[in-house]
Amino acid sequence: MTILESTELFNQDNWRITREIADLPDGRTKEALIAHRCDSVHLLAFKNENEILMLREYRPFFSDYIWMVPSGKVDKETDILVAAGRELREETGFNAKKLHHYFTTEYSDTLHISNHVFIAKDLYPDALPQDASELIEVHTVSLQQAIKNVQESSHVHGASLCALLRYKLEH
View 1 (cartoon, helix red, strand yellow):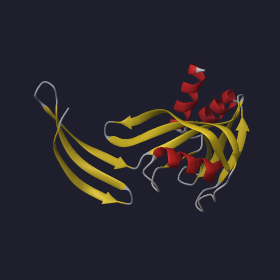
View 2: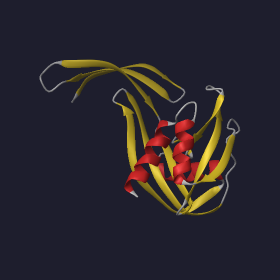
View 3: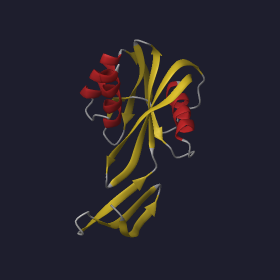
View 4: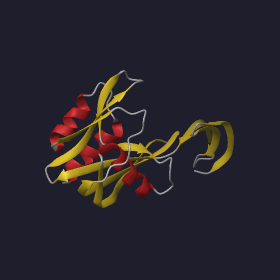
């Protein structure tokens, strides 16, 4: 698919909305509004082989706590590995001797935000201050309990569930 036309409609606060027209293989075209935002990182942070760090975070726009893996925006740097390390330190108080990219997932073709999932192992204390607008509890649980907690949240954090289930299926 080739983008034939792109018109910016909105650009503010790390969000950009465009109207795009692209060609289809049969010669027709498709028009859509596309939302663009900075990418996100998500961490499967293993305390040991049997336990993973999970966050229970209050989300004010849901008016509830949700369970999720440590996650955040790639908005302070351009390197996703650097962003993953920063988010791990800010949200859990730990750093990792081993931090590697696991996989990337997308929301849809009209919401351009890549979710980069990392695996963090050999953790050691090395905290950065948490963001002032976040209310986070850090918990150490089994992989099975982590999946259960995310699934039972009032609002399921999709990237967390995807990362945890893929890891469970592959290991």
